[in-house]
Image 1 (cartoon, rainbow, N blue to C red):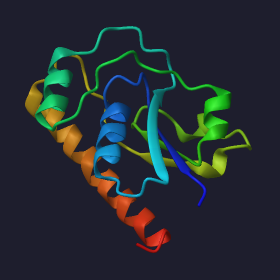
Image 2 (image 1 turned 180 degrees about the horizontal axis):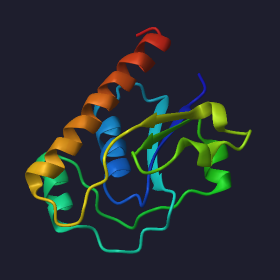
Image 3 (image 1 turned 180 degrees about the vertical axis):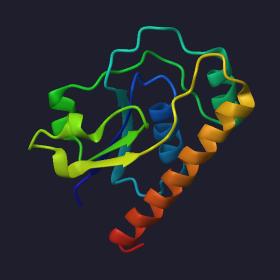
Length: 142
């Protein structure tokens, strides 16, 4: 069976897409489906301490250097999921991958937001990933 590759994308790959990747890889039981994450803009700022604490509270690590998308990367993935309300779907309209794109309107995390506010965003992402996982299980006959 061919491996299915999912790319979670947000603006800078500092929080939303990393949470989606970490949670998907934690709950996904189908080893033929793998997930990664990246940002559409190179993220160069250090990660927000409250975001790191929030991720850790849910059992995820979002440490590491943010990744940025490239044409090659986008071509290699079967599904591109925008985990952001501030990244337009239209930037992925190039014919090679426009049919692979799904958009989730997840609000951006403002620097210094409280852990409670960050948790609300994580819970929205978890809900969307759970829905995606169920859909993938049905498609794969599980």
